[in-house]
Length: 304
Image (cartoon, rainbow, N blue to C red; front, side, top):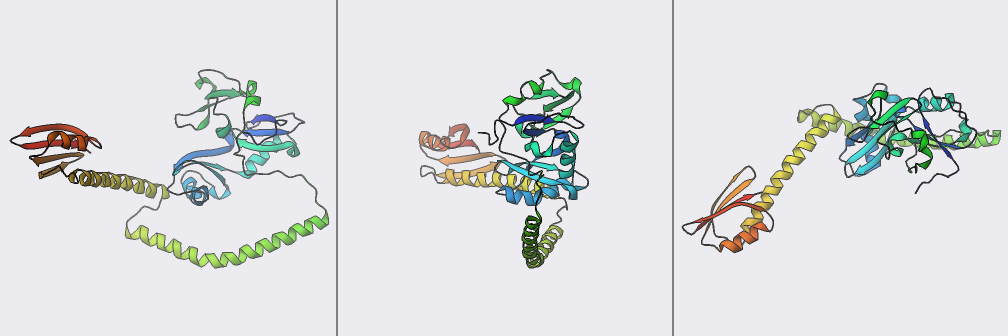
């Protein structure tokens, strides 16, 4: 369900776009105003993901210190991450001619236009790539010219608003004074906390660097994540093999003569066993590639 009032008009904002509007608006931002990537991050929640996002975008973008970030969790360990410059969006809205007081909320087109795999608006073309990232493309690329303005009012906006606000309220001197006092209190608390945490953070950074050096790890976070992902996959395969061996060896009907493991294929020789019971037991969990009997020896090959 949309959290936005139905009275607000929806506008898809492109660069250098001029708009004459006197009613409340919800702005859908063109991909021209932000960067978006899908990252595999081995953390449990969005708060933890936000802590590492700047390092991930730092390998891609210049002037990373000017960026703001927003993160949406797609599924376990997978996050949709946005990077944008607040000032750039503010200036684009202001220069479009829209009165800032009329802006109800701002959204990323990436999240709001998924029902339109490709479309054009204001003589510009956009489409979703194979990995579901909305990008701007040359007009000649589109197979069909869907004009978004014809359908934009039917879009049900998500709850994923951009974390940016425009204010035009005039405060009295008393209100400004109260705001300054509150800001001073907050600043003082944070200032004290900074020194309390600085030492612990410094120790943690040093520990991380020592671990990287002792294990010959690369400095890039993306490269380290790739190594972790690869090793996790290998480790899981070995765990699966051990579980399979334990399961098969636990069969009370089996009198094992010998066994060999080559890759993902386990070959077992069993003495004087009930062939059918043994096959039924193994096939409950694993695929039997072959099963032959020779001189009271049952030879079974199992795909792990």
